[in-house]
Length: 150
Image 1 (spheres, rainbow, N blue to C red):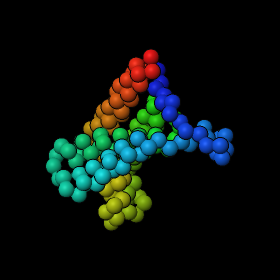
Image 2: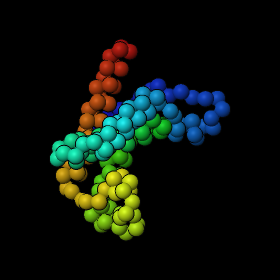
Image 3: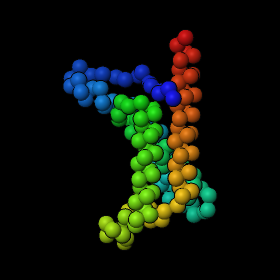
Image 4: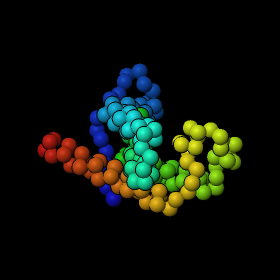
């Protein structure tokens, strides 16, 4: 699979070479992450249904994490997407082992919302769908960008 890369990486003269290559702020990803975070908070506070909160919310959270990661790190689309998917799967499997209770956070509402308290196989599918949306969107952006430069 071909990796998608963006070439709008600003470099500062004062940045050490190692940090220059690893870190880089991309405003458009940060704005998307903030907007998705606001949507997630609104869903958590006001939506109590059986479709949007459990499925759309989970799909959006992996996109949010992806955008946040891409806001600050100079990594490929594929690396970021796979990293987010592995992370989300790990959190889901920690729910299976009741990580909130093991950490003694069962009375902490924020921890229960962020980490979650119940394992569901369907969540793994929803996370995968969210990352698929990311990959498709990034491919569309890459194709449009390359067609503008040629």
